[in-house]
Length: 336
Image (tube, rainbow, N blue to C red; front, top):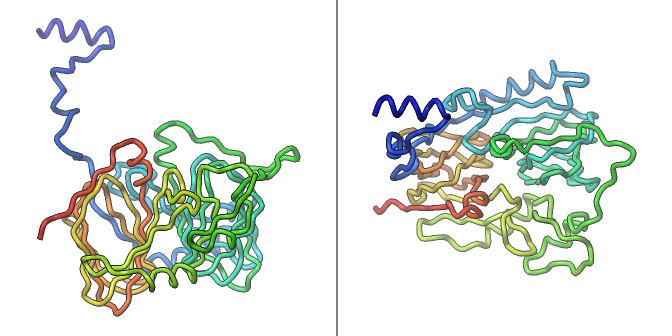
Protein backbone atom coordinates (compact mmCIF):
# COMPACT_ATOMS: atom_id res chain seq x y z
CA UNK A 1 0.00 0.00 0.00
CA UNK A 2 2.82 2.46 0.81
CA UNK A 3 4.25 2.00 -2.67
CA UNK A 4 0.80 2.56 -4.20
CA UNK A 5 0.24 5.76 -2.17
CA UNK A 6 3.55 7.14 -3.42
CA UNK A 7 2.59 6.18 -6.95
CA UNK A 8 -0.74 8.02 -6.91
CA UNK A 9 0.83 11.07 -5.25
CA UNK A 10 3.36 11.20 -8.06
CA UNK A 11 0.40 11.60 -10.42
CA UNK A 12 -1.15 14.44 -8.36
CA UNK A 13 -3.85 12.24 -6.91
CA UNK A 14 -4.95 11.84 -3.29
CA UNK A 15 -6.56 8.82 -1.56
CA UNK A 16 -9.96 9.86 -0.20
CA UNK A 17 -10.14 6.82 2.06
CA UNK A 18 -7.16 8.17 3.99
CA UNK A 19 -8.66 11.63 4.64
CA UNK A 20 -12.44 11.19 4.36
CA UNK A 21 -13.14 11.61 8.09
CA UNK A 22 -11.12 14.85 8.12
CA UNK A 23 -13.12 16.31 5.22
CA UNK A 24 -16.70 15.18 5.78
CA UNK A 25 -17.36 16.24 9.38
CA UNK A 26 -20.39 15.90 11.62
CA UNK A 27 -20.59 19.67 12.04
CA UNK A 28 -18.50 22.81 11.41
CA UNK A 29 -15.21 22.73 13.29
CA UNK A 30 -13.23 25.80 12.17
CA UNK A 31 -15.11 28.56 13.98
CA UNK A 32 -12.73 31.06 15.59
CA UNK A 33 -13.34 32.60 19.06
CA UNK A 34 -15.37 35.80 19.27
CA UNK A 35 -13.41 39.07 19.40
CA UNK A 36 -14.46 42.51 20.70
CA UNK A 37 -13.16 45.97 19.80
CA UNK A 38 -13.87 48.48 22.58
CA UNK A 39 -14.85 51.95 21.42
CA UNK A 40 -12.97 53.63 24.27
CA UNK A 41 -9.79 52.03 22.90
CA UNK A 42 -10.62 52.57 19.22
CA UNK A 43 -11.55 56.26 19.32
CA UNK A 44 -8.06 57.61 20.21
CA UNK A 45 -6.59 55.59 17.34
CA UNK A 46 -9.25 56.81 14.90
CA UNK A 47 -8.53 60.38 16.00
CA UNK A 48 -4.81 59.87 15.40
CA UNK A 49 -5.51 58.49 11.93
CA UNK A 50 -7.64 61.57 11.18
CA UNK A 51 -4.65 63.76 12.08
CA UNK A 52 -1.81 61.77 10.54
CA UNK A 53 -3.28 60.18 7.41
CA UNK A 54 -3.52 62.95 4.84
CA UNK A 55 -3.20 63.56 1.11
CA UNK A 56 -3.96 60.71 -1.26
CA UNK A 57 -3.97 58.22 1.63
CA UNK A 58 -6.96 60.04 3.17
CA UNK A 59 -9.22 58.41 0.57
CA UNK A 60 -8.68 55.17 2.46
CA UNK A 61 -8.23 56.42 6.01
CA UNK A 62 -9.51 53.11 7.28
CA UNK A 63 -8.61 50.98 10.29
CA UNK A 64 -9.41 47.32 9.63
CA UNK A 65 -10.76 45.16 12.44
CA UNK A 66 -8.27 42.37 11.77
CA UNK A 67 -9.10 39.25 13.73
CA UNK A 68 -5.89 37.80 15.25
CA UNK A 69 -7.50 34.36 15.44
CA UNK A 70 -7.81 33.96 11.65
CA UNK A 71 -4.16 33.06 10.95
CA UNK A 72 -3.22 36.26 9.16
CA UNK A 73 -6.36 36.43 7.01
CA UNK A 74 -7.49 40.01 6.37
CA UNK A 75 -10.93 39.51 7.89
CA UNK A 76 -13.00 40.25 10.97
CA UNK A 77 -14.83 36.94 10.86
CA UNK A 78 -14.90 34.19 8.24
CA UNK A 79 -16.67 35.96 5.34
CA UNK A 80 -16.79 39.52 6.66
CA UNK A 81 -14.32 42.38 6.97
CA UNK A 82 -15.27 45.35 9.15
CA UNK A 83 -13.36 48.62 9.43
CA UNK A 84 -13.59 52.12 10.88
CA UNK A 85 -13.47 54.98 8.39
CA UNK A 86 -13.19 58.64 9.29
CA UNK A 87 -13.75 61.65 7.01
CA UNK A 88 -12.87 65.08 8.35
CA UNK A 89 -14.91 68.25 7.69
CA UNK A 90 -14.33 69.56 4.17
CA UNK A 91 -12.89 66.28 2.86
CA UNK A 92 -14.16 64.42 -0.17
CA UNK A 93 -12.99 61.01 -1.34
CA UNK A 94 -12.54 59.99 -4.97
CA UNK A 95 -15.29 58.02 -6.76
CA UNK A 96 -14.40 54.35 -7.24
CA UNK A 97 -16.11 50.98 -7.54
CA UNK A 98 -15.34 47.36 -6.79
CA UNK A 99 -17.04 44.00 -6.74
CA UNK A 100 -17.02 43.62 -2.93
CA UNK A 101 -20.21 45.16 -1.51
CA UNK A 102 -20.45 47.17 1.70
CA UNK A 103 -22.92 47.99 4.43
CA UNK A 104 -22.09 51.08 6.47
CA UNK A 105 -23.36 51.99 9.93
CA UNK A 106 -22.78 55.61 10.92
CA UNK A 107 -21.19 55.79 14.38
CA UNK A 108 -20.63 59.56 14.51
CA UNK A 109 -22.17 61.98 12.05
CA UNK A 110 -24.39 65.01 11.74
CA UNK A 111 -24.33 65.60 8.02
CA UNK A 112 -22.19 64.79 5.04
CA UNK A 113 -22.99 62.07 2.56
CA UNK A 114 -22.10 58.90 0.75
CA UNK A 115 -22.80 59.09 -2.96
CA UNK A 116 -23.82 55.81 -4.61
CA UNK A 117 -23.94 55.98 -8.42
CA UNK A 118 -24.41 59.72 -7.96
CA UNK A 119 -27.29 59.41 -5.49
CA UNK A 120 -26.73 61.33 -2.27
CA UNK A 121 -27.24 59.37 0.96
CA UNK A 122 -27.16 61.58 4.06
CA UNK A 123 -25.05 60.32 6.96
CA UNK A 124 -26.42 60.74 10.46
CA UNK A 125 -25.64 58.71 13.55
CA UNK A 126 -27.30 55.29 13.45
CA UNK A 127 -28.07 55.39 9.72
CA UNK A 128 -27.39 52.28 7.64
CA UNK A 129 -26.23 52.77 4.03
CA UNK A 130 -25.42 50.16 1.41
CA UNK A 131 -22.96 50.41 -1.48
CA UNK A 132 -23.78 47.40 -3.67
CA UNK A 133 -21.38 45.44 -5.84
CA UNK A 134 -19.88 47.51 -8.69
CA UNK A 135 -21.57 50.80 -7.81
CA UNK A 136 -19.58 54.01 -8.04
CA UNK A 137 -19.30 55.55 -4.61
CA UNK A 138 -17.50 58.28 -2.70
CA UNK A 139 -17.91 60.23 0.52
CA UNK A 140 -18.19 63.97 1.11
CA UNK A 141 -18.19 65.68 4.48
CA UNK A 142 -19.74 69.09 3.97
CA UNK A 143 -20.68 69.32 7.66
CA UNK A 144 -18.73 71.00 10.45
CA UNK A 145 -17.95 67.75 12.30
CA UNK A 146 -16.06 64.57 11.45
CA UNK A 147 -17.92 61.48 10.30
CA UNK A 148 -16.98 58.01 11.55
CA UNK A 149 -18.67 54.87 10.36
CA UNK A 150 -18.21 51.13 10.41
CA UNK A 151 -17.68 49.56 6.99
CA UNK A 152 -18.84 45.95 6.74
CA UNK A 153 -17.70 44.28 3.53
CA UNK A 154 -17.93 40.84 1.94
CA UNK A 155 -14.37 41.08 0.64
CA UNK A 156 -13.08 37.89 2.37
CA UNK A 157 -15.79 35.93 0.54
CA UNK A 158 -15.28 37.67 -2.80
CA UNK A 159 -11.52 37.31 -2.41
CA UNK A 160 -11.78 33.59 -1.70
CA UNK A 161 -13.62 33.27 -5.02
CA UNK A 162 -10.88 35.35 -6.71
CA UNK A 163 -13.58 37.67 -8.02
CA UNK A 164 -12.27 41.06 -6.85
CA UNK A 165 -12.37 43.71 -9.58
CA UNK A 166 -12.07 47.46 -9.17
CA UNK A 167 -12.03 50.81 -10.96
CA UNK A 168 -10.29 53.38 -8.81
CA UNK A 169 -11.07 56.37 -11.02
CA UNK A 170 -14.07 57.38 -13.09
CA UNK A 171 -13.28 57.93 -16.74
CA UNK A 172 -15.15 60.27 -19.11
CA UNK A 173 -16.85 57.29 -20.72
CA UNK A 174 -18.19 56.07 -17.35
CA UNK A 175 -21.79 56.97 -16.56
CA UNK A 176 -24.08 56.36 -13.63
CA UNK A 177 -26.74 53.73 -14.34
CA UNK A 178 -30.42 54.58 -14.64
CA UNK A 179 -32.09 51.98 -12.45
CA UNK A 180 -34.55 51.66 -9.58
CA UNK A 181 -31.92 52.45 -6.96
CA UNK A 182 -31.80 55.99 -8.36
CA UNK A 183 -35.38 56.64 -7.24
CA UNK A 184 -35.54 58.68 -4.03
CA UNK A 185 -35.32 56.54 -0.89
CA UNK A 186 -38.40 58.39 0.34
CA UNK A 187 -40.42 56.46 -2.26
CA UNK A 188 -39.51 53.23 -0.48
CA UNK A 189 -39.79 54.48 3.10
CA UNK A 190 -43.40 53.46 3.70
CA UNK A 191 -44.03 49.80 4.43
CA UNK A 192 -46.06 48.16 1.68
CA UNK A 193 -45.56 51.08 -0.70
CA UNK A 194 -43.31 50.53 -3.73
CA UNK A 195 -43.00 52.90 -6.69
CA UNK A 196 -44.16 51.70 -10.11
CA UNK A 197 -41.34 52.23 -12.60
CA UNK A 198 -40.04 51.04 -15.95
CA UNK A 199 -36.48 51.52 -14.72
CA UNK A 200 -34.20 48.49 -14.64
CA UNK A 201 -34.46 46.18 -11.64
CA UNK A 202 -31.43 45.75 -9.36
CA UNK A 203 -30.31 42.63 -7.46
CA UNK A 204 -30.07 44.52 -4.17
CA UNK A 205 -32.30 46.79 -2.18
CA UNK A 206 -33.16 49.90 -4.25
CA UNK A 207 -33.37 51.74 -0.95
CA UNK A 208 -29.75 52.68 -0.24
CA UNK A 209 -30.17 54.55 3.05
CA UNK A 210 -32.12 53.38 6.08
CA UNK A 211 -32.47 56.46 8.28
CA UNK A 212 -32.12 55.72 11.98
CA UNK A 213 -35.16 57.86 12.77
CA UNK A 214 -37.30 55.56 10.58
CA UNK A 215 -35.82 52.49 12.26
CA UNK A 216 -36.62 53.82 15.75
CA UNK A 217 -40.27 54.35 14.84
CA UNK A 218 -40.51 50.83 13.43
CA UNK A 219 -38.85 49.05 16.33
CA UNK A 220 -40.84 50.90 18.99
CA UNK A 221 -44.00 49.53 17.36
CA UNK A 222 -42.70 45.98 16.95
CA UNK A 223 -44.11 43.29 19.25
CA UNK A 224 -41.77 41.44 21.57
CA UNK A 225 -40.67 37.90 20.81
CA UNK A 226 -40.90 35.04 23.30
CA UNK A 227 -37.57 36.03 24.88
CA UNK A 228 -38.67 39.64 25.34
CA UNK A 229 -36.69 41.35 22.57
CA UNK A 230 -37.93 43.44 19.66
CA UNK A 231 -36.26 42.92 16.29
CA UNK A 232 -36.70 44.24 12.78
CA UNK A 233 -34.90 43.29 9.59
CA UNK A 234 -33.44 45.74 7.12
CA UNK A 235 -34.90 44.43 3.86
CA UNK A 236 -35.35 45.04 0.18
CA UNK A 237 -38.72 46.87 0.06
CA UNK A 238 -39.56 45.30 -3.31
CA UNK A 239 -39.43 41.61 -2.39
CA UNK A 240 -38.52 41.39 1.31
CA UNK A 241 -35.11 39.83 0.66
CA UNK A 242 -31.87 40.97 2.27
CA UNK A 243 -30.38 44.39 1.63
CA UNK A 244 -27.55 42.87 -0.43
CA UNK A 245 -27.05 39.44 -2.04
CA UNK A 246 -24.27 38.82 0.51
CA UNK A 247 -25.50 40.73 3.57
CA UNK A 248 -28.35 40.37 6.02
CA UNK A 249 -28.97 43.07 8.64
CA UNK A 250 -31.26 43.45 11.65
CA UNK A 251 -31.58 45.63 14.73
CA UNK A 252 -32.58 44.32 18.16
CA UNK A 253 -33.95 46.20 21.16
CA UNK A 254 -33.47 44.77 24.66
CA UNK A 255 -34.72 46.10 27.99
CA UNK A 256 -32.85 45.84 31.29
CA UNK A 257 -32.02 42.25 32.30
CA UNK A 258 -33.58 40.88 29.12
CA UNK A 259 -31.61 37.87 27.92
CA UNK A 260 -31.96 36.61 24.38
CA UNK A 261 -32.47 32.97 23.51
CA UNK A 262 -29.23 31.04 23.07
CA UNK A 263 -28.81 30.36 19.37
CA UNK A 264 -26.21 29.23 16.91
CA UNK A 265 -26.25 29.27 13.12
CA UNK A 266 -24.01 28.73 10.13
CA UNK A 267 -23.92 32.49 9.48
CA UNK A 268 -21.05 34.75 10.59
CA UNK A 269 -21.95 38.13 12.06
CA UNK A 270 -20.59 41.45 13.25
CA UNK A 271 -22.53 43.18 16.02
CA UNK A 272 -22.52 46.96 16.61
CA UNK A 273 -23.73 48.34 19.94
CA UNK A 274 -25.76 51.41 19.02
CA UNK A 275 -27.00 52.16 22.51
CA UNK A 276 -26.78 50.68 25.99
CA UNK A 277 -24.63 48.32 27.99
CA UNK A 278 -24.68 44.59 28.56
CA UNK A 279 -22.81 41.38 28.07
CA UNK A 280 -22.74 38.46 25.66
CA UNK A 281 -21.70 34.84 25.98
CA UNK A 282 -20.45 33.62 22.60
CA UNK A 283 -19.06 30.13 22.69
CA UNK A 284 -16.49 30.05 25.48
CA UNK A 285 -15.95 33.84 25.35
CA UNK A 286 -17.79 36.41 27.49
CA UNK A 287 -17.88 40.09 26.49
CA UNK A 288 -18.89 43.13 28.51
CA UNK A 289 -19.92 45.82 26.05
CA UNK A 290 -21.03 49.43 25.87
CA UNK A 291 -22.02 52.02 23.25
CA UNK A 292 -20.21 51.75 19.89
CA UNK A 293 -18.33 48.55 20.78
CA UNK A 294 -18.01 45.99 17.98
CA UNK A 295 -17.90 42.22 18.45
CA UNK A 296 -18.13 39.12 16.30
CA UNK A 297 -20.51 36.18 16.38
CA UNK A 298 -18.65 33.41 14.52
CA UNK A 299 -20.59 30.66 12.78
CA UNK A 300 -21.81 27.68 14.76
CA UNK A 301 -21.08 29.37 18.09
CA UNK A 302 -23.74 29.44 20.80
CA UNK A 303 -24.58 33.08 21.48
CA UNK A 304 -26.79 34.93 23.95
CA UNK A 305 -26.96 38.61 24.88
CA UNK A 306 -28.15 40.31 28.08
CA UNK A 307 -28.85 44.02 28.51
CA UNK A 308 -27.99 45.90 31.68
CA UNK A 309 -29.42 49.26 30.50
CA UNK A 310 -33.03 50.37 30.33
CA UNK A 311 -32.76 50.37 26.53
CA UNK A 312 -30.17 48.63 24.41
CA UNK A 313 -29.95 48.62 20.62
CA UNK A 314 -27.75 46.21 18.67
CA UNK A 315 -27.29 46.08 14.89
CA UNK A 316 -26.24 42.68 13.57
CA UNK A 317 -24.85 42.29 10.03
CA UNK A 318 -24.26 38.75 8.79
CA UNK A 319 -23.61 36.61 5.74
CA UNK A 320 -26.88 34.74 6.22
CA UNK A 321 -27.98 35.69 2.69
CA UNK A 322 -25.05 33.77 1.24
CA UNK A 323 -25.66 30.69 3.34
CA UNK A 324 -29.38 30.65 2.52
CA UNK A 325 -28.79 30.98 -1.22
CA UNK A 326 -26.35 28.07 -1.09
CA UNK A 327 -28.76 25.95 0.93
CA UNK A 328 -26.28 25.88 3.82
CA UNK A 329 -28.08 27.97 6.43
CA UNK A 330 -28.90 26.15 9.67
CA UNK A 331 -30.01 27.54 13.01
CA UNK A 332 -30.40 25.84 16.36
CA UNK A 333 -31.78 27.00 19.71
CA UNK A 334 -30.41 25.72 22.98
CA UNK A 335 -33.22 24.27 25.03
CA UNK A 336 -33.49 25.86 28.47
